[in-house]
Amino acid sequence: MTAPQTVNLNEKFGLFTEQWSPKIVGELNGQQVRLARFGGEFIWHSHEHEDELFFVVRGVMRMELRDRTELVREGEFLIVPRGVEHKPAAETEEAWVMMLEPAGTVNTGQVQSERTVTDLERL
Image (cartoon, rainbow, N blue to C red; front, top):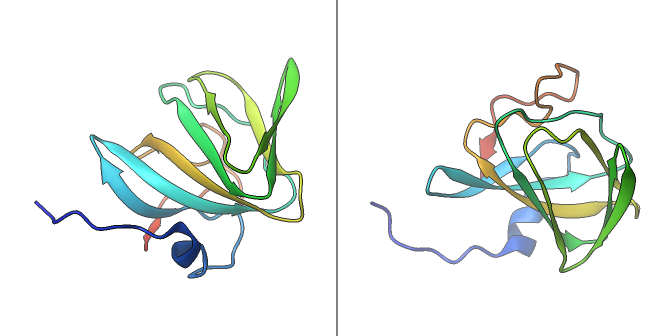
């Protein structure tokens, strides 16, 4: 068992600049806390077995869903239920987003693309 440690999100986001490359900053109960910088648009995808929580730390995230678009601002979060096709995007130049999802969740779901990251770095 590891001792509890405070995590400063601004410090962690300062450790990387690449976009669409999630980093693991914590784990609890089989879930990972991941950070990613969003810039521009991602790809349409879904996760068959995993719900995802997107919490915007800085900027504005646009979440495109097949039936609507949601804008998520700083201090707000959105949960995308398993099986729901979605396409995240930065509505501002860049959005800093914290995600909570089960360990092993692939960022592009069942879709394989140049944006698929399977070996996530731990910060």
